Structures are given as structure tokens and as C-alpha cells.
Image (tube, rainbow, N blue to C red):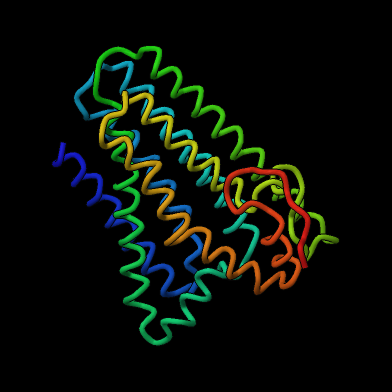
Length: 257
């Protein structure tokens, strides 16, 4: 299994290196988000093809993992890369912070994305092991459906809000965005529980929900997103922070100020 994981990592490391060279010319690193998602789709299919395990289980997990990752990659490509010419605010902030050292630091960042894709592929790989698909696995499929439908709905709600020019500079509080500041991240986190159930609670499957929570709250998710939101939306977003749950959907509360 380790040889399979290493082979997958080598392919992603090479692909992310080429993408890093591209951003040297364009000075736009936004496409790395698409590459991370597409890389996970590749790993889901790659592992399902070569790993040992019951064929039905391997095909099921490979399909679930690749469909989820490709949906996310397509959304990021169409909503962030193709619609906007300028670099995502998170990466502009990183580029400004690193200054003249941005080239080597971005290389490490890109390789970190390759490593993260491999890390998050391990729950899928673990879930591919085992016998025929049973009731717990089908419960995992149900969780996967809820997560993917939820992600799709909140992405569409945000896209419609941003498409209305009268909302420029405003905070999206429509639909599920009224109950959580990051419902997209919430459903992304829910998605990883599917592999815990499909894999029967195998140790490696827990990497998904645990690592995703750490990434969202401490590394690349919520902190940078909210800093950028405050810069672009100011006091409106500060009110949103005071009244709306950061992650778990919950009825908003009255502003105390």
C-alpha cells in the first residue's frame, strides 16, 4: 500500500511543480485550489484501480471520491479562476507577506498541497479495503449524498448573490449562509464522515474529519477567509461574525452592539 501512496504522491508533486512554474509567469496562484481538488479525484480513481479489495467496494469509493472532488474542482475553476482575472485575496496577502521570498515559499506551499491531497486520500484508500458493501457503508453513502447536495446548494446560493451587482461589498446572508458563516466548509467536513462509515471506522478513515477540522480552523480555511472578508466588507462582516455561527448551522442571534 505504501508503494501505491508514494506513486500517487509523485504524480501530484510533479503536476504541482509544473503549476508552480506557471504561477511564476502569471503571478496568480488561485488555480492551486483547483489542482488540489483535481488531484484528489485522480488519487480516488488511481487507488480504486490498483488497491486490493472487493471490486464493488473499490468502485463505490472511487466513484464517491472522484465525483465529490471533481464537483469541487469544477466549481472552483468556474467561480474563482475563470470569472476573475486577479489573484484570490488569500494568495495576494501571502505574496505581499513573503515579498522577495515568495517564489520559494510558494513552491513549498504548492508541494504542501500535493502532500495534503495524499493525506486526505488515505481515508478513501482505507475505505476501499474490506468485504462486500454492507448497511454501514450504505449509511456512509447517505451521508455523502447529504454533504454533496449541501455543498452544491450553498455554492449556488453564494454564486447567485455575487452575480447581483447590487450586492457588491455586501455580506451574503441568504439561504444557509444566514445560519453559518461557512456552510460550504461545514458540508465539506460532513463529507469526510462518509468514509468513516464506509470503512467501518478503520483508523485511517478518521484522518478525514479530524484533519479537515484542523485545516479549516487553524491552517488554510476559516482564518484567512475571514481576514480577507473583513478587508473587503468591513463592519458589515464584523456584524455577521457577532451574530452568525462560524461553522455549525445555527439560528442567528441579535447583535449586542
